[in-house]
Amino acid sequence: MDILLIGGLWLNGSAWDRVASALEPLGHRPVPLTLPGQGDGSASATLDDQMAAVLAAVDAAPGKPMVVGHSAACTLAWLAADRRPERVAKVALIGGCPTVDGQPYADFFEVSDGVVPFPGWNPFQGPDAADLDDEARREFAAAAVPVPADVAKGVVRLTDERRFDIPVLLVCPEFTPAQAREWIDAGDVPELARAKHIDFADIDSGHWPMVTRPAELARILATAADAT
Image (tube, rainbow, N blue to C red; front, side, top):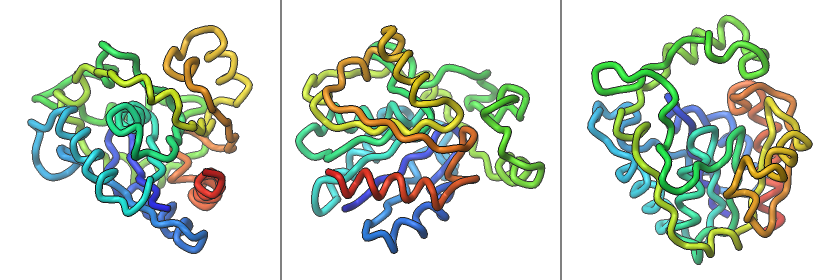
């Protein structure tokens, strides 16, 4: 099965290199995505541009792919399910949940000169970055790609309720499956509260398991793909 891999803010396809290397021997074809505005010098890229690139990858898959979104890009993965409910086999969400219709994609950090630069590690103190050592933090910050403002501030539009029929895997890194279930049951994650088939996978990591637990993350994703 093709497994499309979409990184969160400041990440391009290279963030998945070690996960992809671990997925191939497990019988799946990883497809890490580098989207418009992720290192191509195009600060004018929009959320629609990125969504179009994700949909092109879905359409190019020989069968129904599993679409994996990390952090903010959980919303991009969910948008793929919304736009291609007949083509997406499963959605895997890592460390995040989909934004609801009508809300900005990822309007969390300050815009500077038309982009959202990596803000440093202060916003991520605690469980998010606890498993990143100093060298890993330096490498991450050096590789971080500023996010075009029109991506971060792009308004999410969800239109097809068939997305709720697609199986979902929620991978829980810096939070637990029990916490995720509480949030969903409390109505804090409206999109997942309406999903008809949702499974949870725990991974003992911070917010970026593709950096600190790539082999374990690959096994979780392969198991989810095998179960479709």
